[in-house]
Length: 312
Image (cartoon, rainbow, N blue to C red):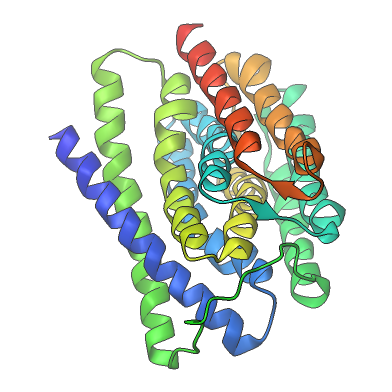
């Protein structure tokens, strides 16, 4: 039964990623705004919805380690797994505004989370309000001032969609990604618990990969269709959303207490390290580009993180 849930979840996620991409491209054309902005808002919010649902439910049901571990693990998986696979499939050329705006915002959000939880092991309601307020400021800035951060290859099939089709693809994509993630998580957690793995390990490995599958589906579909601006923007935006929106909203509803010390002594440092590593990788070995070598480095780091987390 768990295997069936996982397969059904993956099928829904692939279709959902494709529908969401079509809606995002059409929306960027209709509004005449950079695709990187669409990727970091519309697509990121839809693909971060599973993390939000899982984290809020986990915190309310008394499983705060799943709520926190899900977000930290998802951010690690977004870069160490999803970005790695994406750039292995096709290199991404990056412009200056990426390291001037997008990467610093992601790092700021990551450090903010670290500061809030490292001393008392708890994310308070007022801290959630601060985090969500930062997200609102960031989105206002994006919509007003952001310039394209990726050199995009405009395919010839970029055509505006009628409004009803645009809304249909957006709704279908979001629902399919959410439903697919739910099925995948249920199946994966069922399998993991069968083997007696702790809540934190389930959260930062199985659940986080499950909730990162939407980002993987959307990004792989994007890069295969040469929509690299959406692919990169979606991943950076999802990490920002995961921290500022998912944990911000969750902690506003109920404070999130960290029970498993591994989240504070291991996982949070891996998230900070992999997030920081993206910047030098953009410049090495070839300036302003992420290629297959960078993908292998990120994938290796993610493999080491997963191994150490499960074995510890």
